[in-house]
Image (cartoon, rainbow, N blue to C red; front, side, top):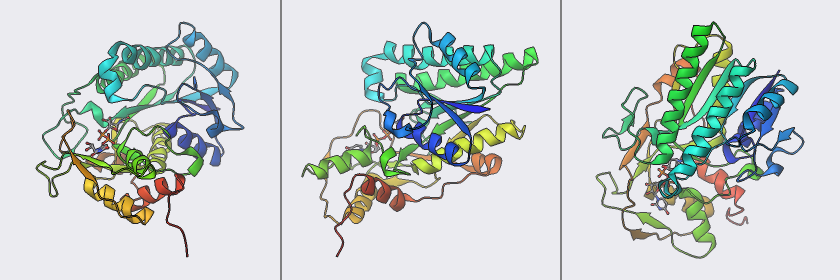
Length: 330
Ligand code: WQD
């Protein structure tokens, strides 16, 4: 029996693929390589499928049958908030169209479990600092909306399977701010989020920019919950094992550390890890940024016995090492 990982050549997907392979699970990667990198999954079977294409459902069914797949971890999706506002239909086509084909293929085969990449973007701009899963979800951009709709589609698929007496379980994981690298060659190459952006700017000899320092937080900058990509990858394995154990009383989990860090604290950690003095520029607030977003991680701790092992300094150090920017020794 093998695990199909869609988006398995991506930043987070490839970390999960690596962990699954290390523990001896057979893995089949599906990736259209639009942002994925084949070298991240060298030596493993990979099928190139654009999940939103007209023939995707049939091709998935064929791949699932050929490789005796019984569980799916579904990462493949578009994930840039700004781009989703500019091109919402493309986001619906890829994220909702892709998931539709994955669920249709699962229904036609013997898939028993599914793990879905969801996001803290489903919460929108909550007015509480610690966010628990049962908070009302009010996403404020098309990216977050496609993730919340995806969660609803999965809930509907679970209900439908129960009505038909078919065994099918699913877990939705709401990621907070994922960063770092478990293995240098699997690092995030996209330069879309705070840590890679700051590393990129200091490599270019430029000062990083802080998007607003007049928020109602201790140092005036936004607070986020940064979680190490390797910890996040472990959460997927815990979710698969939870479904195998037959316990599926909860289906949605936050994945974070439960501890917030401000933009200034992240930049200080980068200064420490690179051994450089960094003097950031203070810029304007970025539209749509909640002042603080930190995961309440009680549910995932209680149900999946998962907790983050790495703190902010370790996350930053791993990203700095992967970028080859650690201080020279001696
Ligand atoms: C973090 C903080 C910025 C760049 C987004 C998505 C979310 C998820 C993760 C998913 C914020 C500040 C940033 C810079 C800065 N995406 N910042 N200067 O916005 O919390 O979350 O990425 O797949 O859905 O919304 O992450 O890394 O963009 O920003 O001051 O040059 O860093 O304002 O407070 P964000 P981010």
